[in-house]
Amino acid sequence: MAQIVGAALVSHHPGLMQDDDFRVKMGDGADSDLIAGYQRLRDRIDAVRPDTFVLFDTHWFTTGYHLIDGGAHMQGTYTSDEMPWYLHGQHYDYRGSPALAELIEEVAVEQGVMSKAIYDEALPRHYATINVVNKLVHGERVVSVSTCQNCQPRHYLESGRVIGEAIRRMDADIGERVVLLASGALSHKFNEIDWVQKHPRMYHETNVSRQSNVAADKEAIALLAQGRHDLVLDQWDSKFRPLPWEGFGGHYLQMIGALGGADCRSKGTALSDYENARGTGNVHMWFDIETTEAKTTQEALA
Image 1 (cartoon, one colour):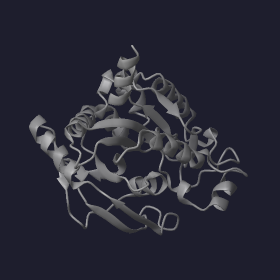
Image 2 (cartoon, rainbow, N blue to C red):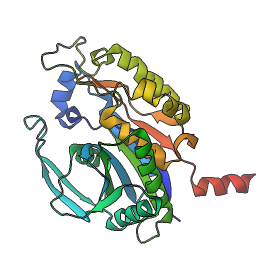
Image 3 (cartoon, one colour):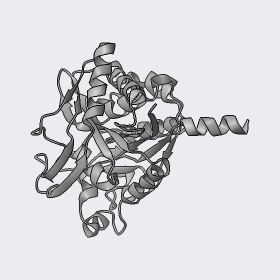
């Protein structure tokens, strides 16, 4: 039986893909800590030895279905239509897992959840996937999952539940060890086009669009650090959804749905500073997962 061996909330903002000199200039003499945070994340990933990533993409907006990228091999050069002067020339080359995509759809059909695998070679890829792949992936397979825009929070949790079940049913031919990557920010309210930054370090939290968002983001980070996903979900509609989180929070909700939803108690470790990106709140967080090996070791020591 395959298993989820780790999970992470990961920032993908375009500023992180700029050259070192530019980032340091924007940081008033020091780079974004999210850059060093990628290596800290990779160290955690190396420790759990995954063969596959499932990546929840907050830029792949779909309608009517949660979609699963079933491509076998993704290769090309990416230019953002959102900001082509800023994010361009991103080469990508990574493997997918059509078999896992097929299995996710199979489980979705069984459970009455609207998830569908797509195998079209012309399917566009988005920078919430490409940026993270280029920073974190070292040859592992990557399966991207969309953010379906006509969903309520429960639908994202259902999508995640299906993915968690599909992973448990994977055999060795598909993969045995999976890390979940929730690619996106926390609060995601942009500063206006003619905004003037408040702090000379662009990444400083005082440059986030609203200080009330900073407070809510930090409250969420504290709850995630305690593993109190139940409390995050309890307050989702009243506190976190209205900010809003990037992609309606679909990246986090699908990830946590795959980990058991409100029953999940995986504690998060912040592996970067909390930082601004054009008014949005960003952080890398890693969630340790109790694996079969860990349970066996604990039982042997008991």
